[in-house]
Image 1 (cartoon, rainbow, N blue to C red):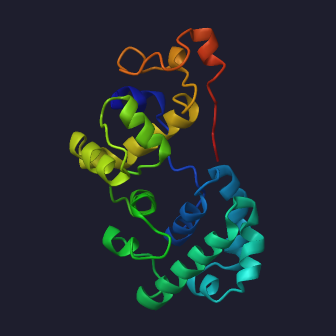
Image 2 (cartoon, rainbow, N blue to C red):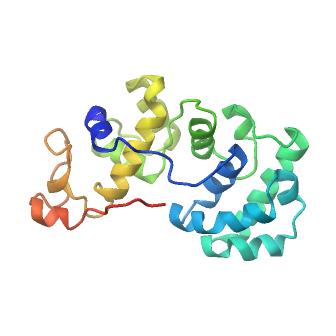
Length: 218
């Protein structure tokens, strides 16, 4: 299944725009409960005004809130990004650490966010268990777990470590485009003959193709 996904999505990648590990870390925190596209519209103004952790840590919260408002939950997100920026300034010399154990000590940063940063900014393999990844892993029969940490552990045992980051991208892309939560486009899915959940959505190809979202989502 992973091979077919690799053939289907040869250009799969992180759909958040970033230039530095710090930018990716902030963008990933902001992506909660919104789309990558919305984050990508918001971060240029944020990083133009606050290019480094020390800048964002010292910002006026109301100014940051005004920039982040389009991403939703902007007060909580402002607190998180300013808090993690202060932690980077105070504990890591203004640099984003390249270790999961360090990243998850930052305010608002869990394993999912840490693995996004490690895999895409540091080339350290990581499994990103977002809602798409977890849903597809269960539909594929790879796990029965709901807990993201347990899903990460189980899937990690099934695939070579070097595949983890790209596997994450492929499942997320497939979940956004074809294997939707409510009406998966089963009849248009390249995994149809292998998927134990085939039939959860329309199996007629013409009907299913109308459900496919072309992307990109950035």
